Image (cartoon, rainbow, N blue to C red; front, side, top):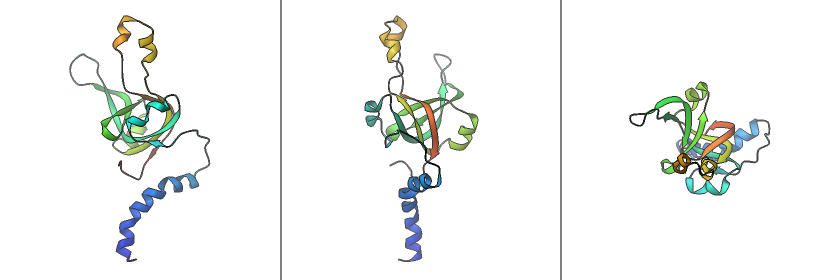
Length: 149
């Protein structure tokens, strides 16, 4: 194999071996996380379980008025394949500096329908409440070497 061919295949090898190499250089952590999830269609059956969500780390804008653009109040979300988002809640400023715009894997516990209890309470204002899934009790955020596929 020529050197040029070897150089061209290195990103593919790194992409495939990246998670393996990372795990072997770090102390073992006890995690019950399932395989990495990249699409919305695989989320619902995993409600309440620890999972790894793969997507692009983004700032969330919070609407403070009925009209107009939202404002950034320190919240983040992961944008998965197809543009679907999973909210991460309020995050540290250092995370925005490190991860904004990058493909990351976030390990945490999934709440697929965070407003379900409010709607079931039969409060009149709660009937229309809905929103994207949320990841809470976040264990780790790691940059992924591979772009989304």
